View (cartoon, helix red, strand yellow):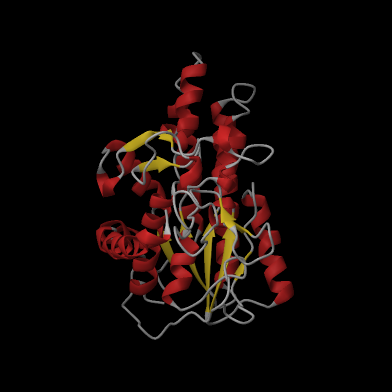
Length: 331
């Protein structure tokens, strides 16, 4: 994504929010609309799907997706374009994160925070909350985003077949419940939460590779079952009357795109768009993926950035869901 496409992306984001309305309505916990809530800051918890890494300490960080650059030939990052879903949420309230706040029109001392970390799992969420509480306690006026659990599913799956599927299901259910308990803990502070379910990696490049590499069982289907049990346990644990938690069904969005290629303009649902052989990082990472390092004919129509992380296009779709949820939830 380049500077020249900013207007297109803005129009697309607005359309995505409208297109996402059916999933948003399905996630609603009830209640009536209350337009009085306006977030004074955004706090992002979870894994690398919500992370901006300010490697150069210039407030122009990079993300675990396809990063925007000045042009298709100029590698300078433009972190405000191809936004993560948490950036889309922050933007509707005129807020920014310190990791993406470049000059010359930067915001002085932004108060929003990204507590999300690379590789984070359910067990790490409590420490992220503690870190925020230690700096500046959560309360009324705070809008918190939570997306975590994908790394739990992968870690549990990788124990198969040394551990039985029944044991792995019990493990992911416990981890989903832990995320739910921590989300309830956040709401006890008075903060509101936008909570996304975990993406099913069964049909991802990772899941497809695992299926092809093993003949013992359909590994893609196993990953799907583990993801479903994680999400079910998470949803069963949260106290969701619609007034404290806005639930975003990311799993259903991605599963629909995989099932119906072409939905929301995403036509390639099986291949990663980033060419990691062109990464300058050790180990290779999509953290430096951009228009300059895509596979041949790589476009915004790809679902996956690498074998397990969402492309910038789908991050924008998630942002559209989150925007609609934040604006329609009876907070």
